[in-house]
Length: 320
Ligand code: SF4
Image (cartoon, rainbow, N blue to C red; front, side):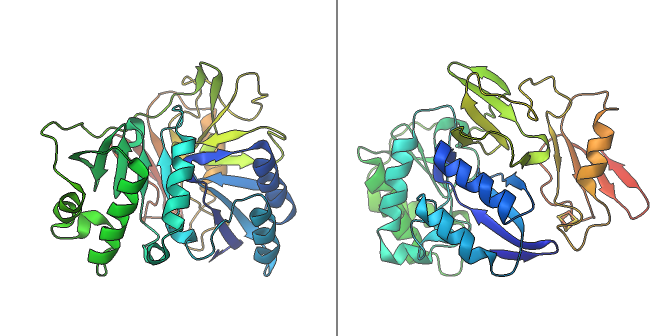
């Protein structure tokens, strides 16, 4: 829980992004009954509920715990596992999550600690990653090929915690990758390049990937539907799901558009950027990445080529 300008903000960690229909219904209902009626999707494939009244976190925590979404109070902050959303990897993610939570000293890993699973998310700068049997450290293939991926990730996490001092990320630790590699075995000479391969909106086999405009989902939608959250603020749904309010084509004007929190959630914001972006969307006439910010901090600005609209208090400055 954090305190935001519009009330309590709860981040619900979802390792691997997979929520059963029951779990997602609990989240939706909590957003409607305790929050502002929306579920925000994050770039770590987690969910946020905001606008919580003082004390509502107890009720929310109880509801989440009942459906397995708060399995460890001690290890909650480090349960950050992003998985390639179209791969069959949730069982591995669940095994990793359980094994990491079972080691008492790993409760002290920083909240920024990140594990990635799968090639499509291997470039998201995880501290530890798996691509098949290849072990990634600090976002790069370290050359190790592992036979027991769960044991390898837990060992790497233990060594990171032992050597990290005040560092939040493995990439900040001098010689950190070398020390972990030495603890685990002998590197293979070949390397796999890290990649970030966003899943495009549309049908993929038995699933449909639906984009969520500005990463903010109306919690009245998708009742009784199992979902998988992606780090690109979209949802993997069973084919045939009613996708009203979402977009399922890369040609949608919403595709590639993002916004920071803005008003009323951020006290620093000079504008209601989401409302302004929503008004602008009908006039959009070119594809590409576009990001809206409520002030010069430009939170959440994506990497790479992006056109930005930054609130000035007197309109928006366009930066490209
Ligand atoms: S960019 Fe500014 S307004 Fe937007 S979330 Fe960050 S601090 Fe708040």
